[in-house]
Image (cartoon, rainbow, N blue to C red; front, side, top):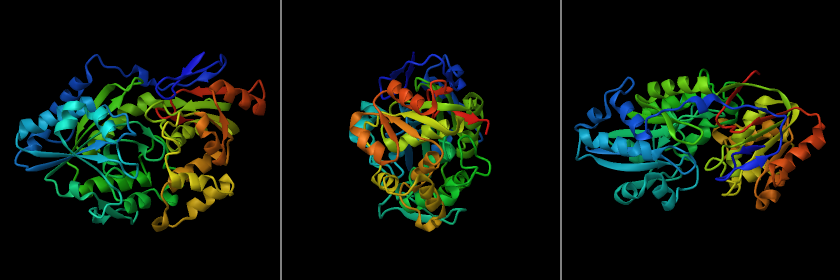
Length: 420
């Protein structure tokens, strides 16, 4: 039996003959506490002065923190960054800016859980609004999209960010520059960057930064915004800090990506059935996010192979636009072709997620294991529904035969599948 990540509890799978593909992230361990790892990274920043030195003489600091959809170990990172800032300038005025991108607003209880009671109750916290009239344009991205950012970031004397690095299904990796784009950008900037042309690029894939047009836009956004300093963590399978990188936003992020790559690459076991998950809570909190793990399964499945994706979807669909796009009468291939052809300036909200989902569905039947309340939604979005992993596997074997080759990727968002 295998216990697969699902919500906060997990879900069993009775399958003894599957090839199980794990990243080597379980081997990335530290005997030091997360706080100590952050402290040491702050003491030895990459291609940057120390944060305490950057804080000297500054009146205001905007501190970008992640939102509720990211398992960033903020309780390790934030207190140490605050201590470093105050060590350099006890009087500096710090405001937290929650990088929601185009996600829903982060709830007070989510912020309290993320930051801890003491920081939450004493800090100034602003949640970014991608549709706010206070967002201001500061430039143009290489894609031609306008770079429109939260004014709170642009008005600060010092701009810093926390984050974490993991494989990302079209930006290559998360972390670093994503605190700016999409984190604190206006919707018009996010839509321009996530356009159909860029999503269609063969370089807009998991683990790829070189020649990735989405990544190139994001790096430009960081430079133009003047992000001064980052602290990014790599987390282990229990979501504890395993390595931390601090310093210059581009150089520190690239150093983290290089380390992570060696632990996340797995060789594809091309199979008739591939079972995967979004890594459990909080990353499997909605159906929209579930597309991420499907891309790992896509890279390991034979043409026409069945993909089984486990996602609790405690928050439901995760995007009304995403649902409307996927639940129409067009075939998956028709959807993909239409999204790819949409001009950059006409990109629709959630189009990128729908485009990638359509790409997967055009080549693979997808069975989604989730809560019974999601059955109608899942089926409307051109997938099959199952209540348990075992039920889904039985359905897949009925389609591909009892002798079908099965691969399990327990955490589809932590791996980079190579071989194609």
